[in-house]
Image (tube, rainbow, N blue to C red; front, side, top):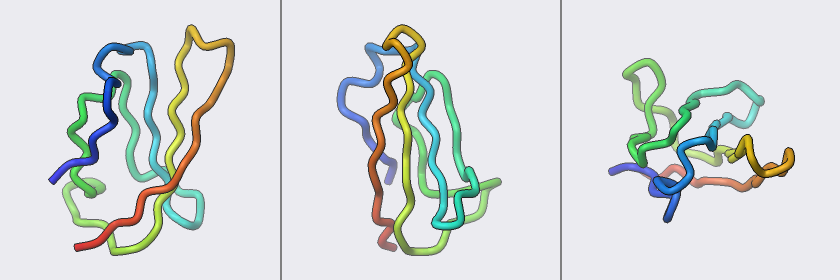
Length: 72
């Protein structure tokens, strides 16, 4: 399974980053191709809450933030 961000393919200028609870970035992509599978360096991440940011270069610095709960 992958994390799907509906409509993100229309915004290739947007950078998607995912962080663990300690604030360590575990994933980043620009453009995001709806392909993150909950791994870091090929290893499955632990269950828990992760945080994401979506920042688009043409969006006057606006950052969208939220959380993802990883359940395996």
